[in-house]
Image (cartoon, rainbow, N blue to C red; front, top):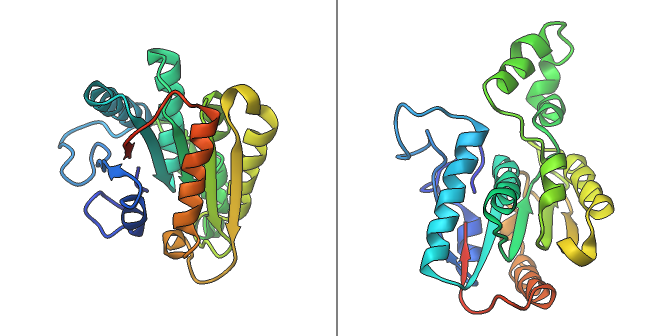
Length: 232
């Protein structure tokens, strides 16, 4: 699931890596690309759309399904997994979070652009509060507690959009507040400052092997799924 400044047809190096292991299913969030006009863009709506796509794919195959979210897509994919579990009783094989963050509020005030204005006395009332009133919360620290599959988190030390410390904070929440035995393990890999910034992690030569290892870990932790893989 893509980030805020992306859509499914823009070049994405994650697709190149994912195709080596998965049949990739890429979707535009509502209001992005050709994913509908005159639609209400809100977190709940996007999550609902993604749930329907997951359930449709599940009618086509009983094989493994993995979610891969980047940036804003990490919040959306985590929220989707929570709703799939709570409303549909469905759990995918694994979740990959690339450049994740904790909440919308923390990300905005930690973002380099947000820092320029966060000191203004009307920043909350004109920026943060309207986003929440329009249905954008992205409370991943809450949603990740309901994820019942293994999680692999990736972040770059030189990420210039989402500071890696937000990703690590989310990892700490998942590691300490989820039950590893019943909900699955979680890992966090911090890539050194090699010029990957916000979107370049899939270029790292170690990522394909990390992905293979993660798939094997998911199979060990949940052996009921087998066969071909699908990925968002």
